[in-house]
Image (cartoon, rainbow, N blue to C red; front, side, top):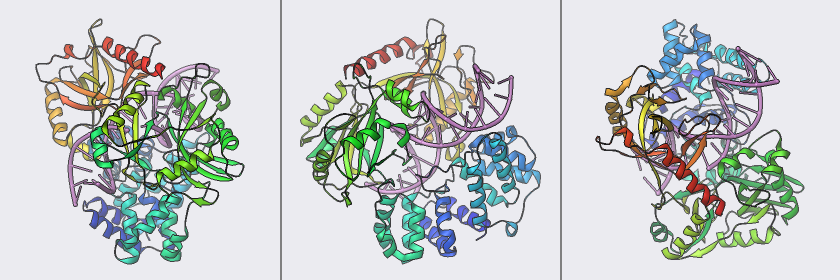
Length: 583
DNA sequence: TATGCCGCCTC
DNA sequence: ATCGGAA
DNA sequence: TTCCGATGAGGCGGCATA
């Protein structure tokens, strides 16, 4: 298949919203491609070159792709980015720049899908000195061989914004349709995907060996399983109403880890299936010492703790353990403990179909003792009071909240459903870190947001000592489409060419706004920040909000000087630090 | 050698 | 991570 | 309810450049 043909399918998908139609178009695409193309096309549909757990990345983001577009069509990055800012899509920008340059090719001249795939793969392999220039050159070469439509879509691949409206579930439906004409194969395809995490493999196997071949694919210790995810509910009442009697676990704020023991070998995978084995030597050694099984796959949350006091450390500290160098030093300074909460596989037996309570029993019998591995606590709750009791305990210890789980549910890989439900501090309406912020700028939107005028707001709190507004976060969520348009309108009278005199900001928004419009922002936590200027003082870092979202527009009589002050932010930060130490 | 840009990855 | 929109 | 795609803070590491 020519790449231009694939791009035609991409365009069709791009222009349709009905899921059923998307599935039909995809099924048609699969029916038109050769067996050798099924696998690469599946990865390309995922916006990738390989399954998630393979460390193959193109290594070009928006800026380097813009460089390549410029190089291919004789302009500079700045020009490409200006067009990009206006249209909100790098593919559209590339197409436009190509047209301006008069360098459009016809569809028949395009290389094949496999040729392009291999060239992208070659770009991903380049590293070392001079590699950035090399990658840009290679991508520019590809662009010069493509028709406008192909240019559009290929530019979206490295930056991860293919925006076809097609995710993994849609591809699974399409594979089923392509082979059987209906959704009947979705279940076995989905099971195989959940256990192998490789959609390209599933698709290729379906083509080569039929659904019987797919049914033979199963868990392979050493290969990650797609992890189960938790839904959210706002209140304990909602959880009891939905689940009735359930297990309750505390929710720790660290890294999700899926640990595989294969004889004397250990592998550790992240929530998104990245291989993190090298980062956590104490989990590896703990697994070898404590896990009473030849082969096993279990999951838990890894947190850093203070080696002397034993207290658990906030996420911002735990995250320092995500590293490639100086691992032993970091492990000494910030050792980890893994709170194990589930087991999927033991000594050749797939446990995913077993009930939660039974998996829990096996888990308890498999991890011996308590050291770097700890089997996490759980209790049964069947009423709101009991649930609240555990929740309050968790909050008092400075933890994130709780997770409620159905006692009789299997391990539902890949699913975000109501077998597992999380209840977080901020959902329960208590101790909310609500902050009144002043808009000091906004950033142009991309994709759908491009039409709304803004995609994010840059907001600040008030520093009365200096009479300045210091940035504390950007806001990219919590507004409806209407509200995005409205907020841009509200800002219009205050737009300025330069940074307003009373605004202190390291971040440069697309548009500066004189401090006037006040909004109410909800966040989960306050963190120290190297980029936000709120509370920044010489060497000392500023403060920022974790998981910020807009909850309301303040009445227009609310003056910017009435916003939350830096001092209040510092007090809130100290309050939460006290809790964390108490844990 | 030090710093900054950028991308990738966690939440 | 959180959130809103579409079906 | 499910699925998708907008967007957040921030740490590390690779590479380019001063």
